[in-house]
Length: 166
Image (cartoon, rainbow, N blue to C red; front, side, top):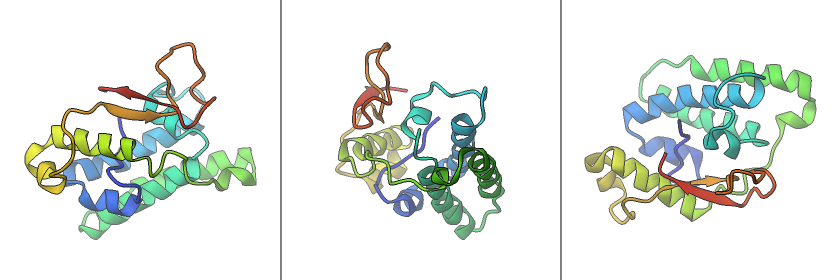
């Protein structure tokens, strides 16, 4: 599971993804939103879920950009509507502040974006190697808000990060 961000800009990140990964991002964003807002839903300990804690509105914006790109390429989408419904249900019980969030502090962290470019190249060297010719190969993911110590609180420092091959 991943929310690919080769760039800090959501629309630009969506624009560069191949069809397979772009389509998958819509579904995975729905899963992440459910993990963030539905008690007992799976994936709650996954690093990609942890990095979006407190930034549910930004995650909704992320998905909006990816679904818009998907539809712009001529495909039908049902994920945006489903994710919005999950978000609105959570917002109804969490109050008006839930609907608003600042951008995540890790958005614009070049180490994170470079790690995503590197992982995309690993998934499809021909396609992504041409898009990111100067990107370093073989990097681990940077997971914001996740520390390497299993006993540490990943939300205690939203700027902390951990590299993982997942």
